Structure formats: structure tokens, C-alpha cells
Image (cartoon, rainbow, N blue to C red; front, side):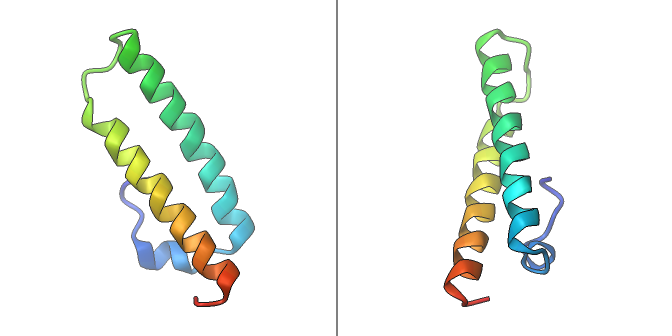
Length: 68
């Protein structure tokens, strides 16, 4: 999802964004687990996933407030 631009995310509906949040949370969990078990060499992907999750949740909050 790191290639998705914020402008593209703003065009999606709230249910689509919420589904993306669920997927991103699952991916973040897997990345953290792989990091603990040393199956992952790209440690930066954990912070990228956290950033994506925060971006999604911010856009959802804006849409629910009616600002977007």
C-alpha cells in the first residue's frame, strides 16, 4: 500500500478505507511477528506500515467529520 497516494485514498468511501485499515493492521501484526522471529530483513517496513495506518485513520476521521 505504500504506493497509494493520499489523493487516491480520499476518493475512496469510508467502508473501503476501513477495510484497508483492517488489512494494514493484519500486515503490521505479521511484520512485527516476523521481526521478532528474525524472518524479516527490511525493518523499515514496520514504520512504513504504521505510517500508512495512521494516514488511513486520519482520512477516515476527516470524512466522518465532514471535512473531506
